[in-house]
Amino acid sequence: MSTTDSVVTVGTELLADAVARQAVGVTQVDWRPPMEGTAADLAAVAADPLRAAANERAVAAMLEVTATLVDVLPASAALGLQTGQFLHAGPPITWDRASGPLRGGLMAGAALEGLVDDPEDAPALFESGSVSLEPCHHRSAVGPMAGVVTPSIWMFVLQDAASGRRTYCSLNEGLGKVLRYGAYSPEVLQRLRWMNGVLGPLLQQAVRRAGPVDVTGILTQMLQMGDEAHNRNRAGTLMLLRDLGPAMVTSGTDAADVAEALRFVGANDHFFLNLAMPACKLALDAARGIPGSTMVVAMARNGTDFGIQVAGTGDEWFTGPAQLADGLFLGSYTADDANPDIGDSAITETAGIGGFAMATAPAIVRLVGGSVPDALATTRRMHEITLAENPRWTVPVLDFQGTPTGIDVSRVCRTGILPQINTGMAGRVAGVGQVGAGLVTPPAEIFPAALRRLAELARDRAAVARG
Image 1 (cartoon, one colour):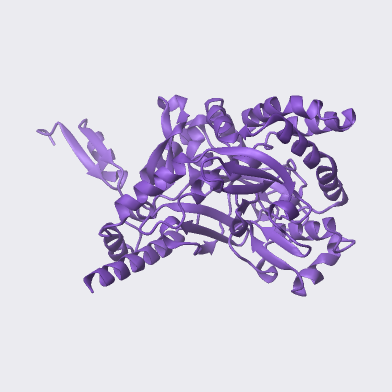
Image 2 (tube, rainbow, N blue to C red; image 1 turned 90 degrees about the horizontal axis):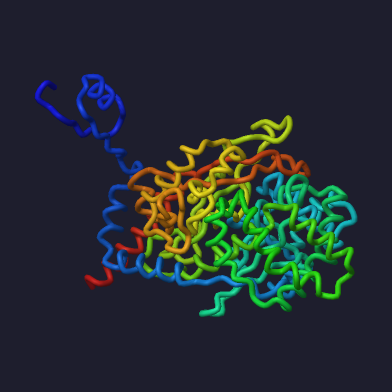
């Protein structure tokens, strides 16, 4: 090594460390082989003549969307849900495979709708097959954690002004023992009835009096103010109150009800999450159905399965087992109490915020069990698996670099880097509620599965072109 000024190393750190100990300059290249068994499919997708233009079109369509809050409605009016129809988070699932928190949320929903007097009587209802389960995503909606939506639950209605397309999400209940974490105790139902009877109608009046709320604009500002819009929404929630508070006060609603609504929203730092989620879905849905595109348009979990959908493969789900999050636990709860990952909230990471924008929210790292250097490294690492940077959502500490946006199935398979998701943790037993918060990644095998389908479609198109 006496004549060498610098060495470039690839792969493990063993050689780099040995060279450095000899006082020789070393540049280590972070490289790893593609995921096992993906070489032929990666080659087929790379050779697809549609791919480059399709991905440019998908990214442009996503970035052009502007989401505004235009109304607040019961799910019966917004989505046409009828008695006995239940929506849930994640890919399709049946009652017999449903996780504890999803079962708990459905039991609470059945009691809320008056289908049973006691939530404990609800399992027989779902086992009978007399009611239906359907993913929120199939109705242009998203639901945090269990994501249970019933006809009487009030929904935020977001709209893209240019296309008129709409997406929907329920109102946030707060933390702890709540339906979305699978709790169904009397206080959970009492809170939901107050939200249906007071909060939803009051927000409807406020939105209609104040006019549409620019949700995309608030997202842009809150990322500059220390929120990453998944596990931290403090600035976003306060800006929503700024926009709707005056109209709530002057709505003519009983002053005590207005005061309670303002206290409820102001004390719930996650309230804006249920606007960030449908805003992200509105943007990503613009990229659906583009042949040749390898961009992920949805990541969602039902507590049993983790599923993704891709722009170039229609509405097909690619699923694998949901993973346990790694993080911090509330009170005396431990990892044994936690259910595998659940919820549609990973739509935020799919759009390039949440875990992908960790660098802009260093205050969140203690909640999810990380460090500030981890947060910076996570955002930088996500750039390696995405197609673009979002010019609206910038990170001050990274010299206002745009957040990594548009997960590319090919890049995930080529690098082995998995998307990083910030998440809450629900108790694995129905009725427990929240037990912690942490970090999680999707099951690795779903990306080679999606790549395989993209390769099949590319080969079919090539065969047709050859005649």
